[in-house]
Image (cartoon, rainbow, N blue to C red; front, side, top):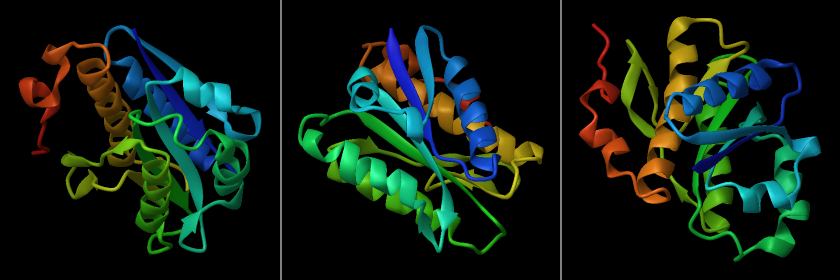
Length: 185
């Protein structure tokens, strides 16, 4: 059974709502255990526990929030080089469009890569003009259907990769599942 950690920091509740949607998406893949953790309650044991992580933070000045950065700089630093090979992705919310949300996702992915995670984005569309290339993003609360679907798609794709590469279930590979490549009409 694959283990997915949805680790997030939320200042206003918007990123927490995204985290819930990402977790919903991960639950769509059979035989996945999903753990939702706010960064203040997270420990290194949560990182060791998981096979895959969806890491989310609000966008602060175009990058990830300081609390999420602090978790990796302080809590996880003694564990550097001990969590290689896990699978990771990112999500972020900002106060408005153009606030650097994709850069925040890239900064999260960069941290995960430094810890040895294999990272990914989602190339298929969740809605017209809505992709999760660098991770799921939103301005403020994830209200619209496309943004919600992008969050769910990110979580389900993470679970597909964990099922394929960790659990040894090649039938879950997204390229072998035509329904996972849905294009909006």
